[in-house]
Length: 426
Image (cartoon, rainbow, N blue to C red; front, side):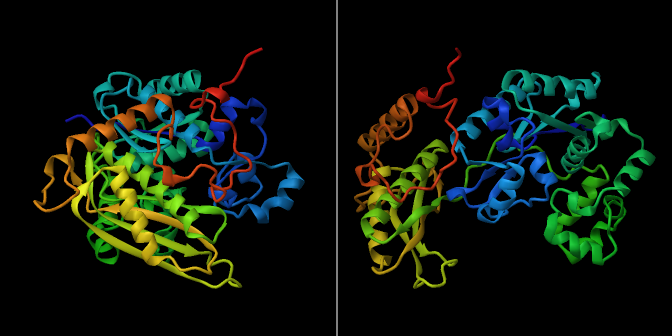
């Protein structure tokens, strides 16, 4: 049986790279992309990493360093990043029929059927195609298992000798062992920063140390995931590609506010907006929600303010995907938990007990029965918003001015998703 060839393709510094595609002046400059409300650095260019800025560093603590080194900050532009991700994944689909989109900037491809080719050259062709068609730089790691492919991608990114494409399947065992002995165990997919210190204490310093460990013994100390990791490091396939993304079991929608919120009307606008967004995702995966959880909280970081947080779960008599019904129930839940006199910093909702649309159990006495009128209304609403732009049609309780909305003082234009922001060539 032929050895598997699994490739992991990963966009380098994805958020920063997306900003650089449309603003080439940023190339070579230190750039960070910030989290919601411009709070923390969630993406850093290599120039910023070289300055020692850690992932998640609060922006307000970086401002002196930013002035000193000319660090440029951008607010997260989720519409741009999602669209660029879709373009990359669409291109990758042309290189293999077996694809698993792992995250917004990572994708697995099964290249086992392409082994007659030089897979390093094939990886370079992938890189060139994505760079030419999107402007985004990627690295490619190829190996016999997903865990090894992730590790190969790490080597492709960190070791210039591989020229951004690393194929473990072309290396003999002594070469691999030497390479693995030089890589810290914390770089392994599924190990990370929490488990690595425990492994260090047990004497497992490098990837090679863990590869040679007894999977049964470490399973007893950790979990079955650790056993699978060790077996995958030894070339035994334990984690298959998920070509079909399984439906989510819960859908969460929440944001921190740009300014503190004191009144229930503004809280109601945010809850309506978050419920509407969650309902769109619910319909997209052809599911119905059987419950909705609503919560609000003040900021735990402002200790001088009175603190309050509360949430309520509301079971639905009959599952639904109707935005208007879900918003109405969420607003009723908000009224139950709202207390005046607090400066609210965050609110959110979660749709739970999700079931496939084809498996709805109706209730003879419920007023929330799925009906043709509701279905046509939601279909029309989704179609118009897809064609004319997000929130062209919306529930009025979502509000219009939204003074509480997320702070995005450094947001770039939505170059690919908004007509007004399309670049003009002169």
